[in-house]
Amino acid sequence: MNLSNQIKCLLLQFEIRSIIHKVMSQKYVSIFAGRATRDLGEKIAHAYGTSLGKSVVTEFSDHEFQPSFEESIRGHHVFIVQSTMPTADNLMELLLMIDAAKRASAHKVIAVIPYFGWARQDRKDQPRVSIGSKLVANLLAAAGVNRVITLDLHADQIQGFFDIPVDALYASTLFFDYIKDLNLDNLLMASPDIGGSKRASAYAKRLGTDLAICHKQRARANVVASMTLIGDVEGKDVILIDDIIDTAGTICKAGELIMEKGARSVRAFATHAVFSGPAMERIDNSVFNEVVVTDSIPLAENASKKIKVVTTANLFAETIHRVESYESISSLFV
Image (cartoon, rainbow, N blue to C red; front, top):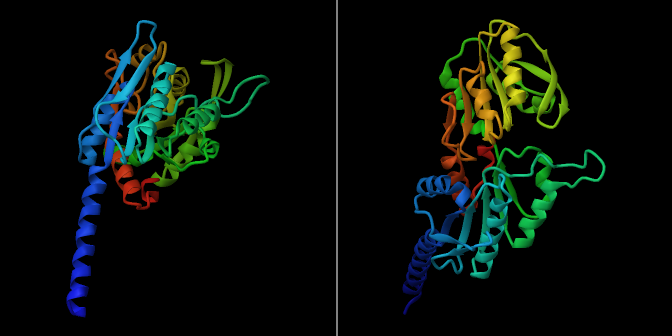
């Protein structure tokens, strides 16, 4: 065989290997979901261009449970979609699925956590309390996860609790288009508390609007004693921005205060719809035109008609694609 034919043969072998690598790379990406966010997992898998992997959870009479994968994942890049909102079973199920994937010889295990529970416990703000988010980070690492993809962490410093890559996405990527489509002439961004002022300020800067901030005093956890408004909202269409709506006490009180100060309308946007306790009743009786949230946490069947849901499926699917193809995801951090 002369040199020319040898070169052609090598080029052909290289081309065949490249094709095989692309095919195998696509084949060896598996997306699974825990029970807490199975619907979102199916949407993410569909947006990525595949189907959700088969897994089951066996429950025992004492309420112990054991997840298992019903297909081979040897050598796969396994993405496990599970939000870790209460109950603690959701976190435990994610940890068990990670452990099961590692023991099934998965090449890499990536936890896709749309809602990172315990994120509000990000520091020791009083004596003799735990730092829950740091403990969760340790548990995920101990289970064997290689990477974490999450959305709107309550505190940015939580990324520093991990010694593995963490892709912390932002719901602003989704909310900006929704806000622009509202075509509000007198738009003003607002934060329901001082802690969220940085987030609201980023929205205001991007959308070219003014900013208002509500300052609250708490009587105790989940109970607001008093609230004052910083900024002029008269005649404005106000959008309150937050990362979490829990009992909805703070954000509904902020909405009432803004309307009392002369706003033309008020809407609430929040990434994570925890909606515990009296949240639904409060939203039903609130002054909001609408409350826009993502599907990082599935809504209860009795959800208020004021609530609108924006899906995160395409955002997570695109992130998975870029992680797998070693592309930058910085353009997704809007």
